[in-house]
Image 1 (cartoon, one colour):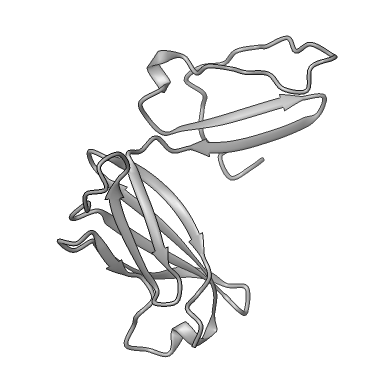
Image 2: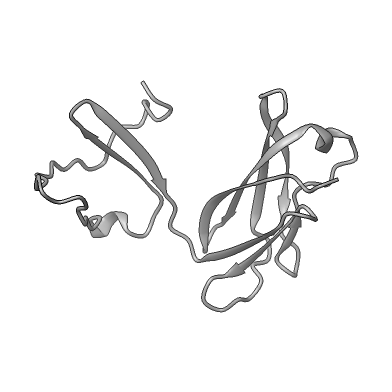
Length: 146
């Protein structure tokens, strides 16, 4: 029924929760700790899902300029050739592909600049940032002030 309804689980587990406990700590099985996973929890008719991205990336956005800087999390070195795919939510409510490309030798990518006036109608950006060895993540940011 949800956006991930077509995914069959690779692993299912039933947990018994204590009534007097507000939080429960759960460790993912080792087979799922090094890749992106979809976690779904259901109880008493409620169902919640979230995607956990495993990555070694440190991402900084310069919202005023519409740029993103991608670095290695622990070393603060630029990540060259990280793929960036940009979607936008327009002020009309429409969601669409905006642009894509790769970070340069400094680990930077300009996600806002286009040779059209589409930026004037952007309400919000969604950036999918991926590197084959360092993992992937999604960031949402506001458009630059004009």
